[in-house]
Length: 189
Image (cartoon, rainbow, N blue to C red; front, top):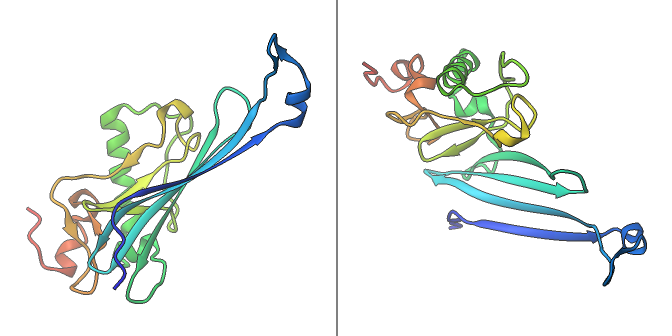
């Protein structure tokens, strides 16, 4: 049986600009401008046959700062298939509405400054699972300034499992208060 524990692996690539090498520099010779890229992954959950991780890709090609992009992956280890957000929400027809409401509440509660108003997530939105449930995140400049990092939306109060015995993907009570009574008969009061 394959078991992958939480860990971070980083790959770093450096590129030195030939133009910068030849363009002069200080009294000790030319100063190279280093371009680089870093890719790393972090396993966020490996429970009950589901493996979830995210991959961060960072690159610097000059300027005030580099750029970063994150991609989440959640796999069903029995089938090897990549699970969509809809599957993680147990195919509930209102999962987008429930998640949107929670994100909007958390934006308001934290006074998160937005550069673009948040309206809705796409049904196939990137996500990953943590032990506490589904994590939705914003890419830099998607809704917030670069300095805000990658805001993550989750609610750690009373984690609720969305699957039957065959699965593990969970949504917090905030995401799932409409779903739980229909799937596992849990009293959400």
